[in-house]
Picture (cartoon, rainbow, N blue to C red):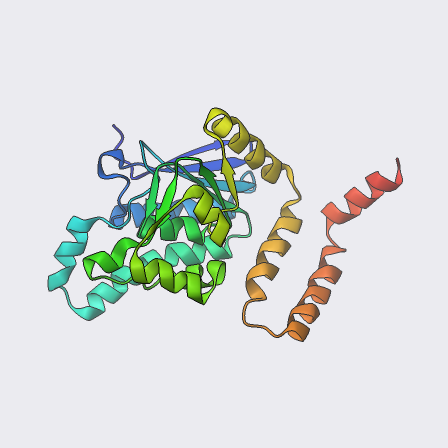
Length: 253
């Protein structure tokens, strides 16, 4: 078995990152965080990467933080623990800032920090058997950073229900509340995932970057401010080579 916490493969403009601790249900530890950040930086700089797919090795996507590492942190200072938490937070921020789609492809369990990783992605494609939840409250802990994504995805009331009770959702329930974009059937899961990723990878990179940036910058703005931002993005998008080429091809038909 590879010692790499995150395996990476670039194929057809799709960079697949695989969380690689199947014996630990892909629990998140410090080396995994560091490797995720390195691969996300590569994705940003590599023009051959059109989309990033995040997956888990083995039976589960990710069961959350490494509990042994968490237990060791009990004796550390608040400043040390905050620095460690911020390092994971950098992964969430890097996913959000990356001007390329980041897609969580989830099978099995996505729990606690693992559900946070999925929530930080731009899209979540879930296997019919997948489950999602934030059970930290049952361990006397708080899913503090992931609430930044969760509240934006599902709203305050549903977010409080999920983190306050720790209940686990089926993939269909997760889609119903807004955590999941699509639930794909077992019989055609890999084929449909491959098709959707290829479709994203083939789309205009500049258009996807504008879409992603505007969606997240709208948060917290008034309606008028959001329209104003849209007008600026609209004007900028018209000047891109992708737009000019697409319009020219359409007019030549």
